[in-house]
Length: 134
Image (cartoon, rainbow, N blue to C red; front, side, top):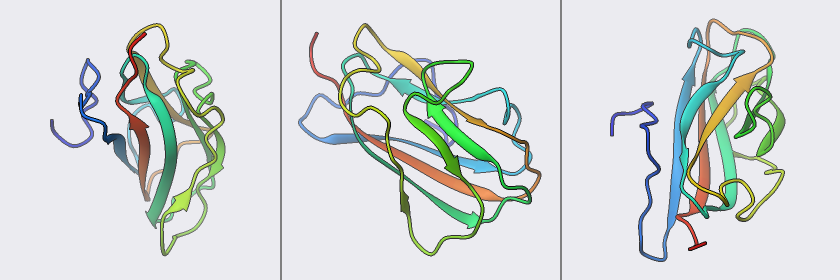
C-alpha cells in the first residue's frame, strides 16, 4: 500500500501482533478542516496507544483530533496541539482504549484540524491489535 493512501478495507494481521495506522500530514494537505481519512479500523480492533512527531512546525497552531465520529473526528484523540518541533515522539491520550470504536464492523478513521496550515509536517502512529472476533 502506498504511503498516505488509506485504502478501502482494514489491514489485519491474524497473528497475535500489534498493527499500526500511520499517516504523514503535510502543510497544504487537502481537507485539513473537514477530515482526512487516514485508514480503516478492522472490526474488533483493540486500540493500544498513539503518538506523533512534528518534524516541521506548522505555520499556525491548530488543535486536531482523530476519530470515527465524522464530522467532529475526535472520539479517539481529542484536541492534540501541533505547535512546535519535537525531538521525540509525543504520546497521545487516546480517549477510549480497547474495542469500542469498531465493535460492529470495519470503520474508517479520520483526522481533522481546527485550522488549515500551509507549511509543516506531522507524523502520526496509532497502535492497535488487529481485531478480536465478535
